[in-house]
Amino acid sequence: MSENQKTLENLLVDEQEMHEEILHDLLEEYIRIGKQSGDLIPQDHFRELTAKKKTLIVLLAQKARAELDMVDTKWMTPGEISTQSGVNQNTVYPTVRELDNEGLVESDDGAYRIPSHSIDQVRDYINEGDTDE
Image 1 (cartoon, rainbow, N blue to C red):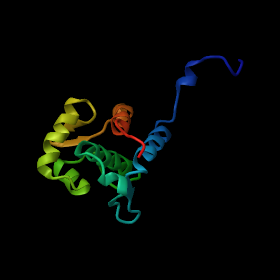
Image 2: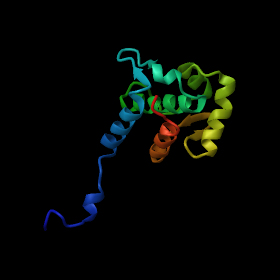
Image 3: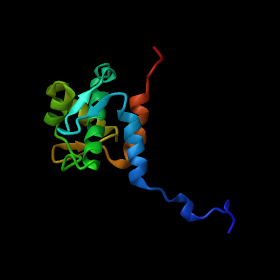
């Protein structure tokens, strides 16, 4: 077989590696994660985001913390999102419902997460409207 031959094997990727790279690239400008505590540490650019984008960043950070075995679940309640993002809980509730309706997050029994198949859409949404200052 030649190196350029197309096979189904060429379609295989390491999902863990791919997710880590995407999560890192999305989060590095906005948030850090405390090594000992696992707490989210907002960066300057995070404070400039809309409530929707802050919510998405916090849910992405939860996904990253789960992959780092720092938390037990990728799911967060609106109260937890509010606590971690600084966004008022009365704003978080309609925000997560809207994000769910848009297909960017999914819900289960009052908790929310970003499914792996939505990460590219979330990236596009977060990067949407970014301008050079």
